[in-house]
Image (cartoon, rainbow, N blue to C red):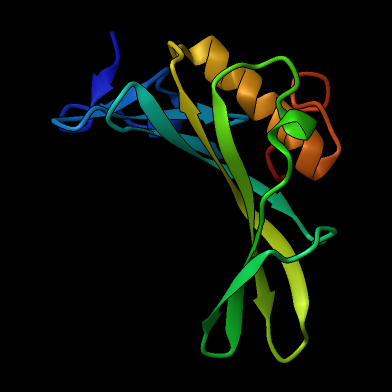
Length: 149
């Protein structure tokens, strides 16, 4: 049974699933540090936001949003490139941050919208694996992140 946000045991990252009531928002933690948030929408659709990170932005910029001296970058890859053979993917996007004045760009997040699927921890883990492979170039099942020493 998932922990609810009002009775969650600490540390949160060690919980199998955390559900925020009453909206049913779920949190899954992978590789200790990485959070995946699943937000249910109408019509059996879900918006999923995943913590990913890459020090380099190697994608084109489809859109951007100015934030003072920085800006958010958005790229929408073809879902088939990331989620081959996974049904229900409506769209996905990579979110980056450009830091001025250095113009350094990095990946900070990945979002995907799925419809008509039953989400389980195992399914979310598979989505996360594919995103990490696409963005970071590693399979977290074979090359997991390590705690800093």
